[in-house]
Amino acid sequence: MKKLLIALLLIGATTVLSAQTWQVADPDATPEAKQLFERLIKIQKTGIMFGHQDDLVTGDTWNLVPDSPYRTEYGASDTKTAVGDYPAVAGFELGELELGGLHSLDNVYFSEITNRVKWFHEQNGIITISWHVVNPISSQWPGVKEPNGAGSAWEVGFLSAAGDNAVRSVLPGGCNNAMFNSWLDRLAGLFLTWRDKDGNLIPFLFRPYHEHSGSFFWWGKGRCYDEEYAELWRYTVKYLRNKGLHNILYMYNTDKVYSDAEYLAGYPGDEYIDVMSIDWYGSGEEFNGHIDKALAHTTVLATQHCKLHALSECGPISEDLQKILAKYESTYVLIWRNAPSPTPQSWVPVKPTQADLLRTLKKNKKYLFLKDIQKIK
Image 1 (cartoon, rainbow, N blue to C red):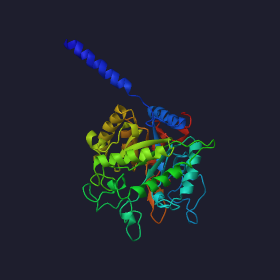
Image 2: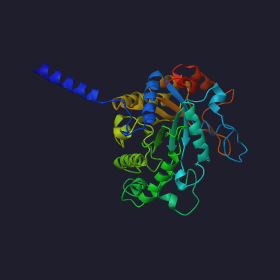
Image 3: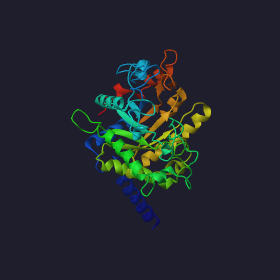
């Protein structure tokens, strides 16, 4: 009897596992979105793509801003300067699109982003989009909005889950729901212009409301309840799907996490997510230990949910991190943006004496750049 019970349990477990399939979350996904998902599965089995935020629109000493003293021509790339190839993954930021302006919070024009998205798609590159959407409460207050201060996604000091709660304010029944819908309309309007030469919607990865386990954005831990965060996700995905956008693969994302329970707090459900990812900045022995453990359990979680995995933001990518990440199956790793003055950033060093880390990565067959993935269909 005991053996029979064990056998039945094993059969049941096998049935559950076989019912889980690796497929795009959207039941109405476009053929292009399905193809992208299947391609990413193949890539994840092959290696880890190198990604760089804003690689095609700004760099250590250049940008595409009109009338800027750092203005250069299309085709520039700090990654290409350093290693002779473009990144496999190009990241773009849409923060402040919701306000109706011409450029993002990083002063990158949305027209330039659209141009580069279309071009990179033609090169068979992978596109990932983030959205540091402004605070729906404080962005309405009088005064000058600042990129990382008043009115921005980072202004959260007055928020709490039980008190002033920006997430609750944008959900149905909230005082800012109509305004938030207009923001989603602007977002959808831009996405609907991203089409290939045949008129098909370009498939891409979308990572909104990122780093939820941190408390530094209005959708973060302690600023709203986990279920409200999950509902924000579900509401956004359904809204964009209802706009006819079935070409998007959605990325769930946290900051530092130390357990499965912490990672899954606020998870909206498998039917809304295609990629499970984490962001973690740092270096040194303590960081190495933490990121190793985090990758170990989040890659397992992703597999259990039949989702892809990514280390979607980090920096710098030390030799230690390169070795640690190479132990796991992850679709890509993305380094944050480079930019010239007045707010210089240089997460991917490109000067000849500084580019050794990226060259080391390029020589490692585990890591993939644009030319490496162009042949993976």
